[in-house]
Image (cartoon, rainbow over all chains, first blue to last red; front, side, top):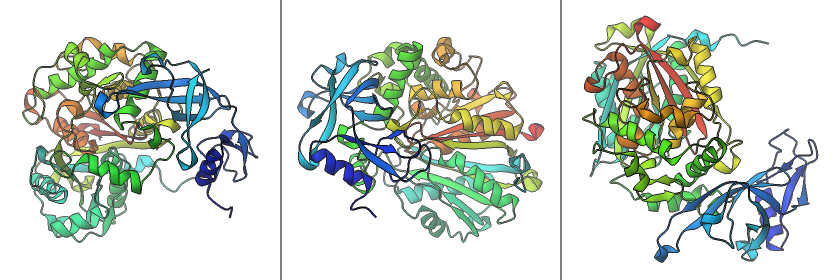
Length: 122
Length: 393
């Protein structure tokens, strides 16, 4: 067994500033979220590869919150250039201005164990 | 190598002979197990049976870990067969499968399926959500604070609108139709008049869904009793036969759903229709799991009542409302009748009542075939069943 499972390994890499996806050695498809077995072909040999960090907004919503509860915020599904989809948020613009089809690029928010991928317009 | 039996062997092999509800709306001071027991008692009485006649017990719960054991103990049932599969709100439609198999293979003779929840007046949902986040984390979604389930369904709605031009007004038509049916159902929780404009002007929860695009949060329980078809006519009420059932799921989290405009109902429906030897045109009355207005549109498309992308136009002009050409969610649905956490049980109860012809002002004339479609998770688990009267067996 490896030192940690794929979820912890991903987070450890992200904490060092590296956004990585898995790539299946069998079918060559990219995989996100990180898993033990490739969901496309069943192979358990998955390599870690640097993410390109670019993608497209597949769908988007605004979660409505009162200003004193932090205000409205965006939640989006991003189709990564490598193929997999992930939930994230698009920031640096009003949630109203996040549109389906928008090109976006990733950055790491937070630090250490709290590191998180978010997106800004490309 | 082929299987020794076919799903077709189960067509018409078992029937629902008792249904019951309890505590729908608000049941302050009642525990989940007690609501389940009360619903079970009503369903058994409807079938002319006692708890001690039950030898197959099936139950699912949002909160109770050993729900099958708890309800067995509560009711004094010592079952030979138990199933507590939980796939979210679709569970009770799914339970038709193991219940039918257990009866057909003689593992037991009387199956009771029951559910109850005090979600509205009992333990706070906010506290429950905190515990779930610890015990069942979704580390690749939770950090972005989706307000689930609405946010996941909002993402599906937004994509459907983008891809097919579906409008917020069309989503609202689903809520208005459900309310129209609820106004004909004295047991429904929300019966005030509701217009498309009312839905649009309501509080936005997660765009494009307002609070009126979202299901109710109520207490309530329901139960049904199943036996083999050979003795189904010996019970007081008209039997509702299981003609077909099919299940499918492709994801748990919305970020893993392959295409947010196409649900696994495409597969579950096809399986149920094939087993029953029926198609959408044979269906007289529908019970679709309407946790959110987009559900009804997606399921009408995926179950063959209209083409993909045309669900918004299809539901417009009152087509699925009272007086429309296709009766959908005649009890008022999860949107206006009852929605205690997992709604699938209530789909079955309404379908059986329609097939018996005992639903009063909302009765669909000559209802012979009912389609029941359960949804669980976030458009995740999809389970379709076809129920029918004696004439359809």
